[in-house]
Image (cartoon, rainbow, N blue to C red; front, side):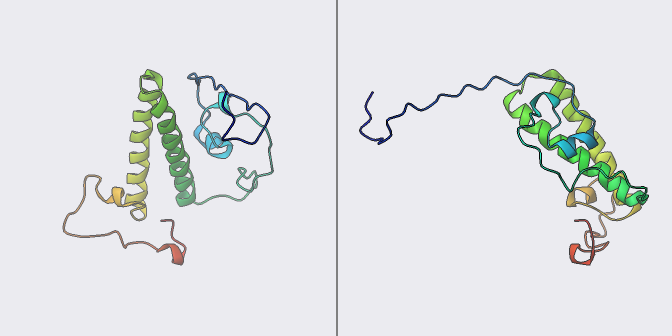
Length: 148
């Protein structure tokens, strides 16, 4: 072995990483809190208290806040599942769940848009839509307390 490019005398470790296997995912709200939808890869090497831990307070959320929480949880699950499917494109369980979550996310975005304001530009293109108006600016902007 030629060590002319390295001044260290130690032999470096070679890591092996097992391929992740499919497992039943967490409930979506739990997944958002845990940082993964997959319990099998949720290895607690170090767990610091999180300020995002689901609150057990008696404070009742508004319908709008509850709907936003659902959108956040489903959106996180779609993103995490996308990462899984990038390395497991032939996983039928993952693919089926991906399309179910996409439909659920579209349904939640549509509901939010109908009741309040468009949350994303994509929300404006969900039928039925009115092509005679541009309503992206409806609702409060982020600096006004909006949720964009």
